[in-house]
Amino acid sequence: MRFFLILTILLCSFTSNTYSQVADYIFPHFDQPSYSNYGTIGLIQMPSARMHKGGTIGFTWSHAEPYLRGSVMGNPFDWFEASYQYTDVNNKLYSDVEAFSGSQSYKDKGFDVKFRLFKGSKYLPALALGVRDLGGTALFASEYIVATKRIKNVDLTGGIGWGVMNRNGISNPLGKISERFYNRGVNSTEGVTSGGELNTSSFFRGEEAGLFAGAEIFLPKIKGLRLKVEYDATNYQEESYEPLGQDSKWNYGFVYPITRGFHIKLGYARGNTLNFGFSYSGSWGK
Image 1 (spheres, rainbow, N blue to C red):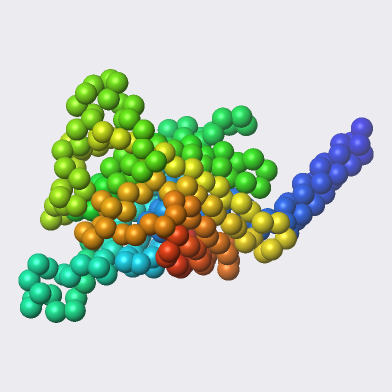
Image 2 (image 1 turned 120 degrees about the horizontal axis):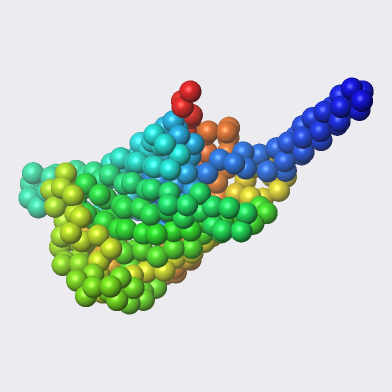
């Protein structure tokens, strides 16, 4: 009896190790989420419902004209993500006084949060709620609810957004609860503040909400390379001080893991803009 018990344990261990080695060979770092251009976990421009483990700290940098963005991200818990953003806005001077600004471009600071509402199950997707530019100038102010579900080697994402995520619009569904949700007050560029203020009075408001979707595809046997495709809900006529051209709502990109925590990325957004960047994350939860 003891012999069969030992044999069973050894066989299970061998099978588990073999499967792990095969999975690591086909899809290296399959369990590591990646970052969006906005410095939080997501697709290219759009967020996803994925989270890092509690105790993870990360840094991201991205360049997608007219923005250069550096972000520090933390997951104090596996259900909560916070990110501090610092953005160089290249299409606006530092101040309204040209003589004072010189060649210095505008700098914007912001704070983003995301909460996991449901972890997901075998048949149901993970669900998260997030807010962009929570305590910043409201230049990128958005709120969203997003769901993500992995099917084999594809991570599928779909969601609804408010604020500057109002393209591909539908009538704000929260307006059925109360008509006050139809009134956001002002658009994002008119409602810009000096920063450090909570814009809670405008959360989830606006006549329209935007729909977005996308996929992160883990390509087999290419050392962890991922392809990202998304349908963008960003309203680029409202997001920046100067309206940005958008030739396509479809964005594409690749993410390549140099190591488990260090990723580089290259993408094409708005149908006219090449973007690139890198990120590093590590777990210090223990």
